[in-house]
Length: 182
Image 1 (cartoon, rainbow, N blue to C red):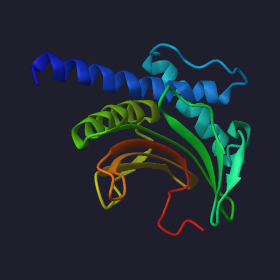
Image 2 (image 1 turned 90 degrees about the vertical axis):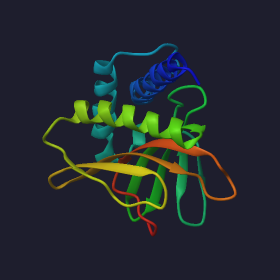
Image 3 (image 1 turned 60 degrees about the horizontal axis):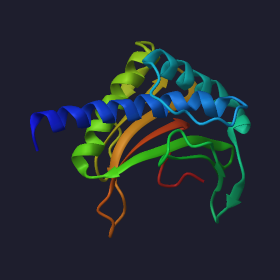
Image 4 (image 1 turned 30 degrees about the horizontal axis):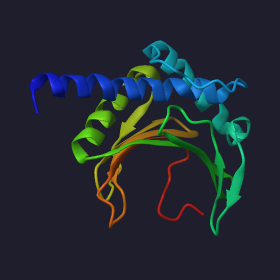
């Protein structure tokens, strides 16, 4: 792959992350319009902060139609961009997350999208947020927390469960997701 192909992939991945974060504004608004173009990093930061403000209410205003499984309820949330899956997930006991996943592809493209998203989130949240790197089975994760605020922001990339070979990048807002989230 040529250097220009790598550069174009990087520009595309960064645009996907900015549009994904910025699309959160759409999810927070009552408008049903989907974003059609990349937005500025400033707009993405406003979007991120708007969704964070919904965390204390369990993201009620962002919930669409829902389905209940054995251990959680998943409500559709407006897609951030075409091909992006976003949900509000109620784990029981009041634990609720806003979660988006995108970039089903290989490890390199997921890592690149993760690094771009991580940079944007770090600049948006600022230095008052503490950064940790929770261990995962695959990929990497960065968790942002702020004092005693239960809302966290996690950006990560990971390999889907076997037998899939796909990798994804995700942005999750709310309490940290654990193996036993119930």
